[in-house]
Image 1 (cartoon, one colour):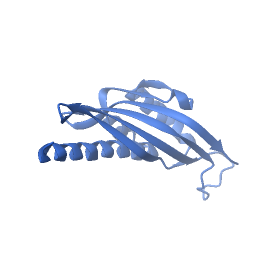
Image 2 (cartoon, helix red, strand yellow):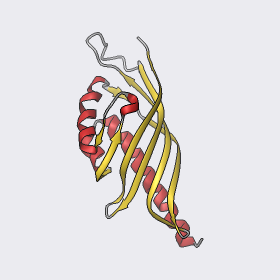
Image 3 (cartoon, one colour):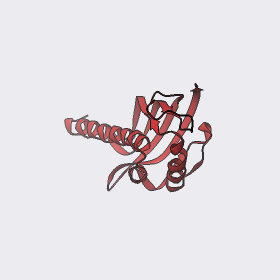
Image 4 (cartoon, helix red, strand yellow):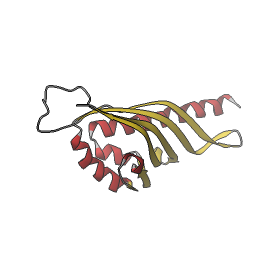
Length: 155
């Protein structure tokens, strides 16, 4: 590999990491416009393993906007990111896949909830599968699949 190819690969990895981090931040902040902007126009999301829906990014963003009202406090941690860039003859291509673990502590809303208490009482964890494509606007998500492996709820 040449230094130019190495630099392009590093730049792609950083840009992809920013998209994955942006995904977590958008969900935690409830910024559904930012969430939608991370995807291609034909982007798909599958939350069915976590009891959610599978659909277009717009459908899922609308569903999340309603569902996340149940969790006024949330912090999405996405870790152990394994990035696989398409290899086109030794150069990075225009597609990538990321496998990453997540831990998502949240605080359930409810009439008995003390608004001053922010400790989590619901935690979900598992693994994401992200598929991305290079577009004119940079790297964008084409598909996100959530593989929830466990959850815990406490009083």
